[in-house]
Image (cartoon, rainbow, N blue to C red):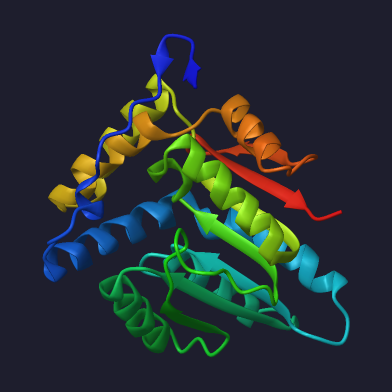
Length: 237
């Protein structure tokens, strides 16, 4: 898949490489947390979650976040949940033990009892089928097209109600914005390298729509939002 004049280019990101030092990984997660806060990623995810939670009567809305990283997006949702009379259970999973440990520490510091974290590889492990919402943020662009289509298909099967994907959009504007943000908001060499590389590997809306078609997720909606990102939402028939 290509966008006119700006083809998709995948390059291995430093955070995905084996042998990454735990301290470097933690510093990178901290940098990504700052960027997510500025990008208001949790706010964009929270809107659909809040709407669904109000529709569910008599039980908690159960949410699974795949490849959750340091957990800041899910914890941001938990902060919003704490200020509303809604029943929701938030659970994040990641293949990295370092990321899960960082997420658990952050959730304890925040005193968020509605959110928990555990180890799971979204690409190779079986996805549990008892969650209403299966979501992921800033993960799809790491994958090859076939991997991305397969992951979307597995998420669609696992989710009881809704699949949510929030990710980067590929463009020259997004690349420049990512470079500026990564060099301004963090000193992490990993984030400064991985951020722009991620944009080059991101999909366009048309490409995401095609991936959804391959995953038999017809009727998915795509909402662009700042900064050069898109929220995809698919409701199970």
